Length: 325
Image 1 (cartoon, rainbow, N blue to C red):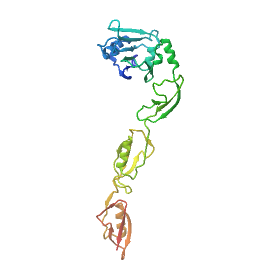
Image 2 (cartoon, helix red, strand yellow):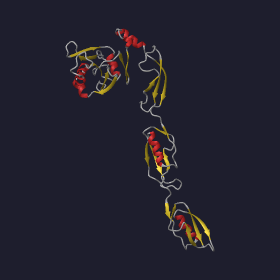
Image 3 (tube, helix red, strand yellow):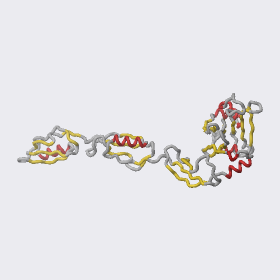
Image 4 (cartoon, rainbow, N blue to C red):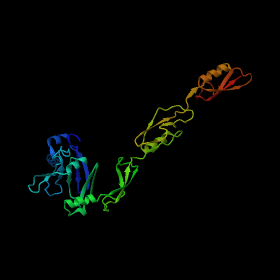
Protein backbone atom coordinates (compact mmCIF):
# COMPACT_ATOMS: atom_id res chain seq x y z
CA UNK A 1 0.00 0.00 0.00
CA UNK A 2 1.49 3.37 -1.04
CA UNK A 3 0.76 6.17 1.48
CA UNK A 4 -2.42 4.43 2.65
CA UNK A 5 -3.83 3.83 -0.84
CA UNK A 6 -3.94 0.75 -3.06
CA UNK A 7 -3.46 2.77 -6.25
CA UNK A 8 -6.33 1.41 -8.30
CA UNK A 9 -10.10 1.07 -8.63
CA UNK A 10 -12.49 -1.41 -10.23
CA UNK A 11 -15.20 -0.37 -12.70
CA UNK A 12 -18.15 -2.76 -13.10
CA UNK A 13 -20.39 -2.45 -16.17
CA UNK A 14 -23.64 -4.15 -15.20
CA UNK A 15 -25.05 -3.85 -18.72
CA UNK A 16 -22.28 -5.86 -20.38
CA UNK A 17 -21.29 -7.87 -17.32
CA UNK A 18 -17.65 -6.82 -17.73
CA UNK A 19 -15.13 -5.37 -15.29
CA UNK A 20 -11.91 -3.41 -15.69
CA UNK A 21 -9.26 -2.00 -13.38
CA UNK A 22 -7.70 1.42 -13.69
CA UNK A 23 -4.95 3.21 -11.80
CA UNK A 24 -5.46 6.39 -9.79
CA UNK A 25 -2.64 8.92 -9.90
CA UNK A 26 -0.99 10.30 -6.78
CA UNK A 27 -2.18 13.84 -7.48
CA UNK A 28 -5.81 12.73 -7.22
CA UNK A 29 -5.17 11.10 -3.85
CA UNK A 30 -3.46 14.24 -2.54
CA UNK A 31 -6.08 16.70 -3.83
CA UNK A 32 -9.17 14.65 -2.93
CA UNK A 33 -8.43 13.04 0.42
CA UNK A 34 -10.88 10.52 1.86
CA UNK A 35 -13.57 8.32 0.40
CA UNK A 36 -16.02 11.17 -0.19
CA UNK A 37 -13.46 13.30 -2.01
CA UNK A 38 -12.25 10.38 -4.11
CA UNK A 39 -15.80 9.37 -5.04
CA UNK A 40 -16.65 12.94 -6.09
CA UNK A 41 -13.54 13.19 -8.27
CA UNK A 42 -14.23 9.83 -9.93
CA UNK A 43 -17.83 10.81 -10.65
CA UNK A 44 -16.68 14.04 -12.25
CA UNK A 45 -13.96 12.36 -14.32
CA UNK A 46 -15.70 9.17 -15.39
CA UNK A 47 -19.42 9.83 -15.08
CA UNK A 48 -21.98 11.11 -17.59
CA UNK A 49 -22.88 14.43 -16.00
CA UNK A 50 -25.95 14.76 -18.22
CA UNK A 51 -27.43 11.49 -16.94
CA UNK A 52 -30.38 11.64 -14.58
CA UNK A 53 -29.97 10.40 -11.02
CA UNK A 54 -31.84 7.15 -11.76
CA UNK A 55 -30.39 6.58 -15.24
CA UNK A 56 -28.12 3.56 -15.81
CA UNK A 57 -25.33 6.00 -16.77
CA UNK A 58 -25.34 7.56 -13.30
CA UNK A 59 -22.35 6.06 -11.51
CA UNK A 60 -22.64 4.53 -8.05
CA UNK A 61 -19.25 4.72 -6.33
CA UNK A 62 -18.01 2.98 -3.19
CA UNK A 63 -14.73 4.57 -2.04
CA UNK A 64 -12.31 4.38 0.87
CA UNK A 65 -9.84 6.85 2.33
CA UNK A 66 -6.12 6.50 3.17
CA UNK A 67 -6.86 5.60 6.83
CA UNK A 68 -9.42 2.91 6.05
CA UNK A 69 -8.36 -0.44 7.46
CA UNK A 70 -5.41 0.73 9.60
CA UNK A 71 -7.01 -0.64 12.78
CA UNK A 72 -7.36 2.74 14.50
CA UNK A 73 -10.70 3.72 16.04
CA UNK A 74 -13.00 5.20 13.39
CA UNK A 75 -10.81 4.05 10.50
CA UNK A 76 -13.26 1.57 8.97
CA UNK A 77 -15.38 4.16 7.18
CA UNK A 78 -16.61 3.73 3.61
CA UNK A 79 -18.18 6.47 1.47
CA UNK A 80 -20.84 5.91 -1.20
CA UNK A 81 -21.47 8.66 -3.73
CA UNK A 82 -23.64 9.31 -6.79
CA UNK A 83 -25.82 11.96 -8.34
CA UNK A 84 -28.57 12.47 -5.81
CA UNK A 85 -32.21 11.67 -6.74
CA UNK A 86 -33.26 14.24 -4.14
CA UNK A 87 -31.24 17.24 -5.28
CA UNK A 88 -30.02 16.24 -8.75
CA UNK A 89 -26.48 17.11 -7.68
CA UNK A 90 -23.94 15.41 -5.42
CA UNK A 91 -25.20 12.89 -2.87
CA UNK A 92 -23.00 11.03 -0.42
CA UNK A 93 -23.36 8.68 2.54
CA UNK A 94 -20.92 6.75 4.69
CA UNK A 95 -20.90 3.66 6.84
CA UNK A 96 -18.63 1.69 9.15
CA UNK A 97 -18.06 -2.02 9.56
CA UNK A 98 -15.89 -4.42 7.59
CA UNK A 99 -16.78 -3.37 4.05
CA UNK A 100 -14.14 -0.63 3.68
CA UNK A 101 -11.18 -2.57 5.10
CA UNK A 102 -12.15 -5.71 3.18
CA UNK A 103 -12.39 -3.72 -0.05
CA UNK A 104 -8.82 -2.58 0.46
CA UNK A 105 -7.66 -6.11 1.25
CA UNK A 106 -9.00 -7.05 -2.18
CA UNK A 107 -6.66 -4.45 -3.68
CA UNK A 108 -9.02 -1.55 -4.47
CA UNK A 109 -9.64 1.95 -3.15
CA UNK A 110 -12.94 2.22 -4.97
CA UNK A 111 -15.55 0.26 -6.91
CA UNK A 112 -17.67 1.98 -9.56
CA UNK A 113 -20.95 0.53 -10.79
CA UNK A 114 -22.59 1.67 -14.00
CA UNK A 115 -25.26 0.35 -16.36
CA UNK A 116 -28.16 -1.97 -15.60
CA UNK A 117 -28.08 -5.77 -15.28
CA UNK A 118 -30.73 -7.85 -17.03
CA UNK A 119 -31.21 -9.88 -13.86
CA UNK A 120 -30.14 -9.47 -10.20
CA UNK A 121 -26.43 -10.05 -9.63
CA UNK A 122 -23.94 -9.59 -6.82
CA UNK A 123 -20.23 -8.74 -6.97
CA UNK A 124 -17.88 -11.18 -5.25
CA UNK A 125 -14.40 -9.77 -4.62
CA UNK A 126 -11.35 -11.73 -3.50
CA UNK A 127 -7.60 -11.37 -3.62
CA UNK A 128 -6.91 -10.68 -7.31
CA UNK A 129 -10.40 -11.84 -8.35
CA UNK A 130 -13.74 -10.23 -9.14
CA UNK A 131 -16.89 -12.02 -10.28
CA UNK A 132 -20.47 -11.04 -11.01
CA UNK A 133 -22.74 -13.86 -9.84
CA UNK A 134 -26.52 -14.44 -10.07
CA UNK A 135 -28.54 -13.04 -7.17
CA UNK A 136 -32.08 -14.05 -8.16
CA UNK A 137 -32.42 -16.14 -5.00
CA UNK A 138 -31.40 -13.15 -2.87
CA UNK A 139 -33.96 -10.76 -4.35
CA UNK A 140 -36.42 -9.51 -1.77
CA UNK A 141 -34.28 -10.47 1.26
CA UNK A 142 -33.26 -7.91 3.82
CA UNK A 143 -29.59 -7.23 4.60
CA UNK A 144 -29.28 -9.85 7.32
CA UNK A 145 -31.05 -12.56 5.35
CA UNK A 146 -28.94 -11.90 2.26
CA UNK A 147 -25.72 -11.93 4.32
CA UNK A 148 -26.60 -15.29 5.90
CA UNK A 149 -27.57 -16.78 2.53
CA UNK A 150 -24.29 -15.74 0.92
CA UNK A 151 -22.24 -17.21 3.78
CA UNK A 152 -24.10 -20.50 3.56
CA UNK A 153 -23.84 -20.72 -0.22
CA UNK A 154 -20.07 -21.15 -0.33
CA UNK A 155 -18.78 -24.09 -2.32
CA UNK A 156 -16.42 -26.65 -0.87
CA UNK A 157 -13.01 -27.05 -2.48
CA UNK A 158 -12.58 -30.39 -4.21
CA UNK A 159 -9.53 -31.64 -6.09
CA UNK A 160 -6.97 -29.10 -7.29
CA UNK A 161 -5.04 -30.25 -10.35
CA UNK A 162 -2.18 -28.40 -12.00
CA UNK A 163 -2.39 -28.28 -15.80
CA UNK A 164 -0.36 -26.67 -18.57
CA UNK A 165 -2.01 -23.70 -20.25
CA UNK A 166 -0.71 -21.28 -22.88
CA UNK A 167 -2.77 -18.25 -21.83
CA UNK A 168 -3.62 -18.40 -18.11
CA UNK A 169 -1.07 -17.02 -15.61
CA UNK A 170 0.66 -19.53 -13.33
CA UNK A 171 -1.37 -20.13 -10.19
CA UNK A 172 -4.66 -18.86 -11.66
CA UNK A 173 -7.68 -21.07 -12.26
CA UNK A 174 -7.98 -22.37 -15.82
CA UNK A 175 -11.41 -23.91 -15.37
CA UNK A 176 -13.70 -25.01 -12.52
CA UNK A 177 -15.66 -28.24 -12.64
CA UNK A 178 -18.88 -26.28 -12.03
CA UNK A 179 -20.05 -23.86 -14.70
CA UNK A 180 -19.98 -20.23 -13.59
CA UNK A 181 -23.50 -19.03 -12.84
CA UNK A 182 -24.91 -22.51 -12.29
CA UNK A 183 -27.02 -22.83 -9.15
CA UNK A 184 -25.81 -25.66 -6.91
CA UNK A 185 -26.41 -26.82 -3.36
CA UNK A 186 -24.33 -25.23 -0.60
CA UNK A 187 -21.20 -27.23 0.15
CA UNK A 188 -20.98 -28.69 -3.35
CA UNK A 189 -17.38 -29.61 -4.14
CA UNK A 190 -15.79 -27.70 -6.98
CA UNK A 191 -12.69 -29.20 -8.60
CA UNK A 192 -10.20 -26.70 -10.00
CA UNK A 193 -7.67 -26.91 -12.83
CA UNK A 194 -4.89 -24.48 -11.93
CA UNK A 195 -2.40 -23.23 -14.50
CA UNK A 196 1.28 -24.13 -14.21
CA UNK A 197 2.05 -22.09 -17.31
CA UNK A 198 2.81 -23.18 -20.87
CA UNK A 199 3.95 -26.75 -21.39
CA UNK A 200 7.76 -27.08 -21.55
CA UNK A 201 9.22 -27.68 -25.00
CA UNK A 202 11.22 -30.91 -25.18
CA UNK A 203 14.63 -30.65 -26.85
CA UNK A 204 14.75 -32.95 -29.88
CA UNK A 205 18.15 -33.67 -31.46
CA UNK A 206 18.72 -32.23 -34.93
CA UNK A 207 22.42 -33.15 -35.06
CA UNK A 208 23.34 -34.11 -38.63
CA UNK A 209 20.10 -32.63 -39.98
CA UNK A 210 19.61 -29.34 -41.87
CA UNK A 211 19.62 -26.25 -39.66
CA UNK A 212 16.58 -24.89 -41.54
CA UNK A 213 14.52 -27.84 -40.31
CA UNK A 214 15.58 -27.26 -36.70
CA UNK A 215 14.86 -23.54 -36.99
CA UNK A 216 11.38 -24.11 -38.40
CA UNK A 217 10.51 -26.66 -35.72
CA UNK A 218 11.65 -24.69 -32.69
CA UNK A 219 10.35 -21.30 -33.81
CA UNK A 220 6.93 -22.87 -34.39
CA UNK A 221 7.17 -24.35 -30.87
CA UNK A 222 7.79 -20.88 -29.41
CA UNK A 223 11.54 -20.82 -28.79
CA UNK A 224 14.01 -18.15 -29.87
CA UNK A 225 16.48 -19.75 -32.31
CA UNK A 226 20.05 -18.41 -32.44
CA UNK A 227 22.71 -19.54 -34.93
CA UNK A 228 26.21 -19.38 -33.45
CA UNK A 229 29.36 -19.05 -35.57
CA UNK A 230 29.56 -21.87 -38.12
CA UNK A 231 32.39 -24.36 -37.69
CA UNK A 232 34.31 -26.75 -39.93
CA UNK A 233 33.39 -30.41 -39.61
CA UNK A 234 34.72 -33.45 -41.40
CA UNK A 235 31.76 -35.53 -40.22
CA UNK A 236 28.75 -33.22 -40.73
CA UNK A 237 27.72 -31.86 -44.13
CA UNK A 238 27.70 -28.13 -44.71
CA UNK A 239 24.45 -26.52 -43.54
CA UNK A 240 23.65 -29.31 -41.08
CA UNK A 241 23.64 -29.07 -37.29
CA UNK A 242 26.80 -29.96 -35.37
CA UNK A 243 25.37 -29.34 -31.89
CA UNK A 244 22.76 -27.43 -29.90
CA UNK A 245 22.76 -25.67 -26.54
CA UNK A 246 21.06 -27.10 -24.56
CA UNK A 247 21.57 -30.57 -26.02
CA UNK A 248 18.69 -32.21 -24.12
CA UNK A 249 16.01 -31.57 -21.52
CA UNK A 250 13.36 -28.92 -22.07
CA UNK A 251 12.87 -25.16 -22.29
CA UNK A 252 10.01 -22.82 -21.49
CA UNK A 253 8.29 -20.96 -24.29
CA UNK A 254 10.23 -17.81 -25.15
CA UNK A 255 13.62 -19.16 -24.04
CA UNK A 256 16.61 -19.50 -26.39
CA UNK A 257 18.19 -22.50 -28.11
CA UNK A 258 21.52 -22.01 -29.90
CA UNK A 259 22.80 -24.10 -32.83
CA UNK A 260 26.29 -24.60 -34.22
CA UNK A 261 26.12 -25.32 -37.95
CA UNK A 262 28.70 -27.07 -40.14
CA UNK A 263 30.67 -25.30 -42.86
CA UNK A 264 31.73 -28.71 -44.11
CA UNK A 265 35.34 -29.96 -43.96
CA UNK A 266 38.18 -27.45 -43.90
CA UNK A 267 39.92 -27.61 -47.30
CA UNK A 268 43.75 -27.43 -47.47
CA UNK A 269 45.95 -27.28 -50.55
CA UNK A 270 48.09 -30.42 -50.87
CA UNK A 271 51.77 -29.36 -50.87
CA UNK A 272 54.05 -30.50 -53.66
CA UNK A 273 56.59 -33.09 -52.48
CA UNK A 274 58.06 -34.19 -55.82
CA UNK A 275 61.73 -35.19 -55.53
CA UNK A 276 61.77 -35.40 -51.72
CA UNK A 277 62.82 -38.47 -49.80
CA UNK A 278 60.11 -40.62 -48.23
CA UNK A 279 60.66 -39.20 -44.73
CA UNK A 280 60.78 -35.59 -45.90
CA UNK A 281 57.65 -36.00 -48.03
CA UNK A 282 55.69 -37.67 -45.20
CA UNK A 283 56.74 -34.94 -42.76
CA UNK A 284 55.64 -32.19 -45.17
CA UNK A 285 52.21 -33.76 -45.75
CA UNK A 286 51.57 -34.49 -42.07
CA UNK A 287 52.50 -30.93 -41.03
CA UNK A 288 49.96 -29.70 -43.55
CA UNK A 289 47.28 -31.68 -41.67
CA UNK A 290 46.99 -34.86 -43.74
CA UNK A 291 47.31 -38.54 -43.03
CA UNK A 292 49.76 -40.33 -45.36
CA UNK A 293 49.56 -43.67 -47.15
CA UNK A 294 52.78 -44.74 -48.93
CA UNK A 295 52.65 -46.51 -52.27
CA UNK A 296 56.03 -47.73 -53.65
CA UNK A 297 56.79 -48.36 -57.32
CA UNK A 298 60.06 -49.50 -58.84
CA UNK A 299 62.81 -48.64 -56.33
CA UNK A 300 60.41 -46.74 -54.02
CA UNK A 301 62.92 -44.23 -52.70
CA UNK A 302 61.97 -40.78 -54.09
CA UNK A 303 58.63 -38.96 -54.08
CA UNK A 304 57.17 -38.93 -57.58
CA UNK A 305 53.80 -37.37 -56.68
CA UNK A 306 50.63 -37.62 -54.57
CA UNK A 307 46.98 -38.45 -54.98
CA UNK A 308 45.34 -35.94 -54.90
CA UNK A 309 48.09 -34.12 -56.73
CA UNK A 310 50.07 -31.27 -55.21
CA UNK A 311 48.32 -27.92 -55.58
CA UNK A 312 44.83 -29.47 -55.31
CA UNK A 313 42.53 -28.85 -52.28
CA UNK A 314 41.67 -31.76 -49.98
CA UNK A 315 39.80 -32.02 -46.65
CA UNK A 316 41.97 -31.45 -43.60
CA UNK A 317 42.70 -34.79 -41.92
CA UNK A 318 42.00 -36.81 -45.07
CA UNK A 319 44.37 -39.49 -46.32
CA UNK A 320 46.89 -38.57 -49.07
CA UNK A 321 48.61 -41.27 -51.10
CA UNK A 322 52.35 -40.64 -51.41
CA UNK A 323 53.81 -42.29 -54.54
CA UNK A 324 57.49 -43.28 -54.35
CA UNK A 325 59.66 -44.41 -57.31
